[in-house]
Image (cartoon, rainbow, N blue to C red; front, side, top):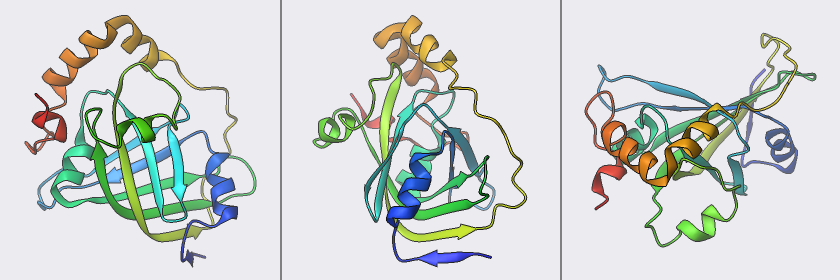
Length: 184
């Protein structure tokens, strides 16, 4: 059964910090636009307060979440327990993108590990916190984080990653601009 909470409680914070994987969902306003759902790992999620979270966003083949947030701000995070006891946690909120040239970049970036390929930080003010049973989620054994993306970014180097972002991360698949498109 679903349970609603007024905030991210201490118990829910503990649940979040034990998860090695979370999912981020965003969508454009257009009914013909593509909903984006992305898995995230690499110790890149932080709880800033009982109503605010952030994640370190790494360079990837698209930049959908950032484009959607710039258009409408809607974001949902999903955490699943893949071990016992079963549980699902959803955080619903309004988010925004913090770029490396933003005034609050340094204070936020210092909360995360230094990971090659860092693109931006997504911050969200959480409006709804909901758990559900998770009984349908299969059991999986955690083996470790993949290093493929980190190795790719390290091999490309800072300039190579920036060049890639300029080629692949300035607009969403639906043609929405991302905040990166506003950088000089």
